[in-house]
Image (cartoon, rainbow, N blue to C red; front, side, top):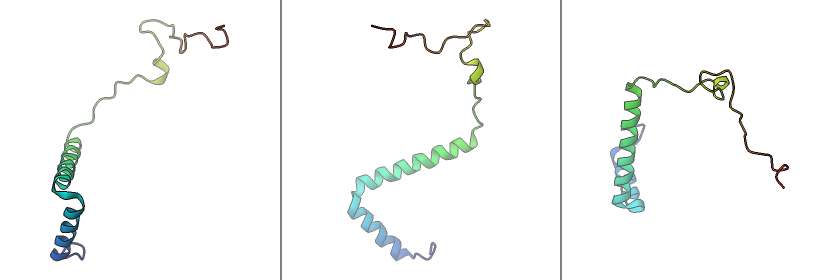
Length: 81
């Protein structure tokens, strides 16, 4: 018994799911669940990746220069006529 559900209840639930979705969809669902669990386990074992994103104050800076890149270089819509 799993949480108060016996073997016969599990069999009935499985038969209802099989009738509703069909064997191919249940197989696809099982495969997707297996891949998801496998990916989760793999991500838990691997070390965290190093974040190389520059801080916000350095994102607009040109490398080796004290100047910053302007955020919007296009002319304003009011200026174009």
